[in-house]
Image (tube, rainbow, N blue to C red; front, side):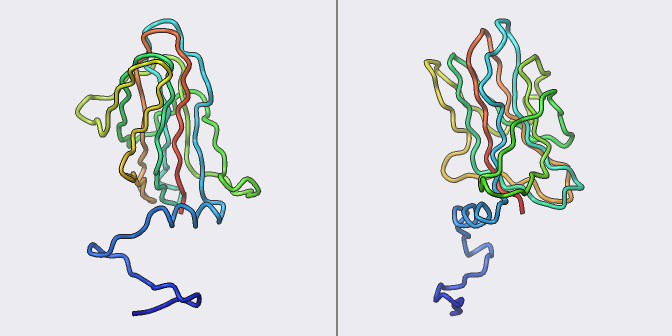
Length: 180
């Protein structure tokens, strides 16, 4: 066994040794490498439209992005979907991106965008996750049981959260991640 200078057991990451993701999230956040990507609070149009939030990691970013939280608040009934992207969908409006260490000057390398107007939904055979909101001001959490998605450096990869809004409703979408 090996120990660090504080007496903590050192463990190597391998297929047989799980790594505590929550500890990494806290550590990278303390280094100013944690970010929240959000649509902010919006009112969807009264018509039947597809809306969404995208976080995209350009191949040239030099960083990997680990997304550990994907949530959406919606005041009506909707079905939410998560799909991978290999091209930045550039949804039309720049998403709000906030460093979780408020004193940090580090900026995100991700391209984050949202749309409150109609987008063309991706093919259904690419869906990774889906969730239904029953309405009445529901918060949907698309990542459960400590699931994560990784947008690796050197690859143009992203995640698109989209849903159909049949009527005017309030919505907020947010993804949280670390960039390393």
